Length: 154
Image (tube, rainbow, N blue to C red; front, side):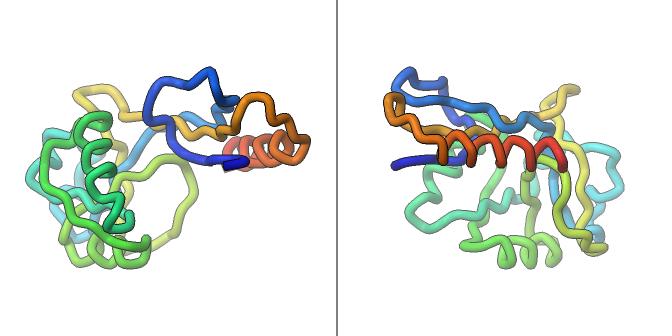
């Protein structure tokens, strides 16, 4: 691996260069027709009876489920979609909600984004770039800088 872009899921390793690109508050994407869409924000407790939709391949389902339970703190049921389009159709059809982070995104009147809270505090996510120590490359450094700049713009 020359370069990885991912959310931070565990403590940084000294074997890798770890660049934080963005830390932001998470939100929930929920059907605009859902009663939950009227909330100014949603807590993990309020969402526990609504399935969380995770976008991942079948081989990653257990990893993503564990992350969402153990790190995010969601204790409800899960549905899986293999791509974002399928997941958004599930959201629009009131089958569940998705968790996202950052700004931007599609303007779809059938989906509402509301802040996600753990208790009274926002749930946050840190997005990072990683690459192996001792493999300096101006291209890798430049790519990390471009990504960081893009996150600061949006």
